[in-house]
Amino acid sequence: MTDADVKLKALFAAEVPPAMDAHFRLAVFERMEKRQAALKLAVVVGVGVLATAGTAVLSPQLNQLLPPGMMLVAGGALATAASVWGVLQIRRPI
Amino acid sequence: MTSDADDARLLAEARAGSRLALSRLIDRHQQAVRGFLRRVAADREEADDLAQETFVTAWTQLSSWRGQSSVRAWLLGIAWRKARSSGRSMFRRMARDRAWSEAEALIPASQVSAEDRLALERAMGGLNLQQRAAVALCLAEDYSHAEAAGILGLPLGTLKSQVLRGRAKLLEVLEAQP
Image (cartoon, rainbow over all chains, first blue to last red; front, top):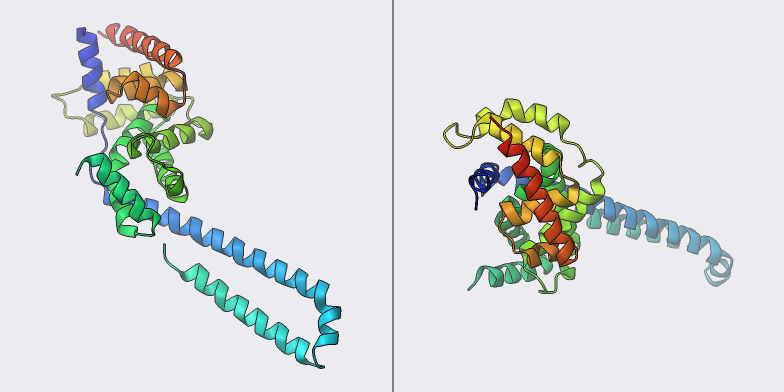
C-alpha cells in the first residue's frame, strides 16, 4: 500500500455519517407513513370505483330482487361501510 | 448471537409488523447506507434523500430478503439501484462548491485538510457512477470484490477492473496535489 493509498483511506474515513441519527430515522418513518397513506387512499378509491361500477352493472337485477326503496337503503349502507373501512385503513399506523 | 443473526431476527420481526424492529434496523445500517451513497451521489442532500428512499423500499420489500446475503449487503444493493436510476448522480460540480465551504467545519483540521477533501470530491467526480460505487465499497468500506460484485450486480471481472481503474484515477488526482 502506497502513501497515496493511505491518504485515500484517510480521506474516505473522514466522510462517515454519524452512527446514530434519530432525525434520519424519523424522516424515514415519515416517508413510510406518507407512502402508506397514499397507498391506502388508492385502495379505497379503487374499491369505491369497483363498487360503483358493480352496482351500476347489477342494478337491474337488484331492483327486481329487492323491494321498492330498498335499493337506496342498501346503497347507503354499502357506501357508509366502505367509508368507515376506508377511514380505518388510512388511520391505521405502520 | 451474531450481528447477522440479529439482523435476520429484526427483519423477521419487522416483517411481522414491529415498528421497533424496523427502527433498530434503520439505526444499525443507516451509517453504512448513507456513507456509501455519499460517495456515489452528487451531494449529501441527494445521498440522504436516496438513503431514506432505500429504507422505504426495503420496508415495502421485506419479504424479498431470503438470507442469501447479509441484510446490509441487501440494503446496499437497493441503495445502488436507487442511485443508478436517480439520474441525478452524474455530476458533482455543485457539491464541490458546497464541499469547499463545508469541509473545514465537518472535518477536524488535524486529520484531513479542506484542500484534500476537495481533491477527493473532484477525483470522485471524474469517475463514472459504476467506478464510484466500486471504489466506495472496495476501497472505502473494505468489502471483498465478490461481495461488492454481488451488491452491484456486476460480474466479478468487471468489478475488479472498475476498482482498478477507479483507484488509478483517484491516485492520479491525489498525487498531483501539491
